[in-house]
Image 1 (cartoon, rainbow, N blue to C red):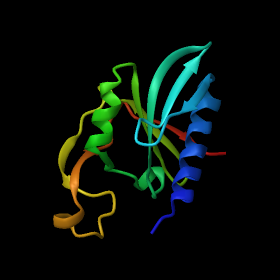
Image 2: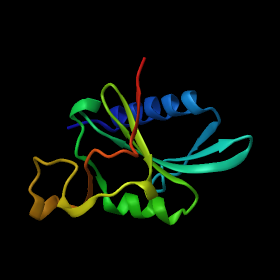
Image 3: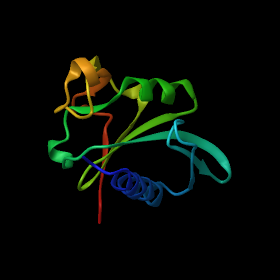
Image 4: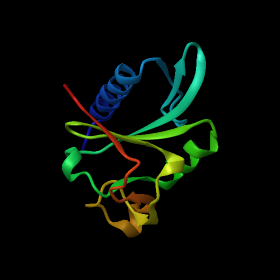
Length: 135
């Protein structure tokens, strides 16, 4: 099982990489809300959700995230961005630009889906995904 500490470390590395590339600042949100608000020159630029993905960028597809988290992200309506934190870098896109499938599944596929499953979003590789490798 992956520790909460490891998940937070991975999310922090991902947001730091994203901000270092594009500039601006970020603000972590309260637990249960979207992960981050992104600001540039003091103005709210976007909401960003980070999804840990324990694979390399090359092997990360299909990308997966909880449908409930995607819904919460797009309900913010202000430039929602989803970012997958892979072992060797990040994959990101604006939520409105990507197409996926919704089906019953789990972030932890080894668990019994009947007992632990939920609605999940699955995204195949597509042109709107952008990549940044870690240094």
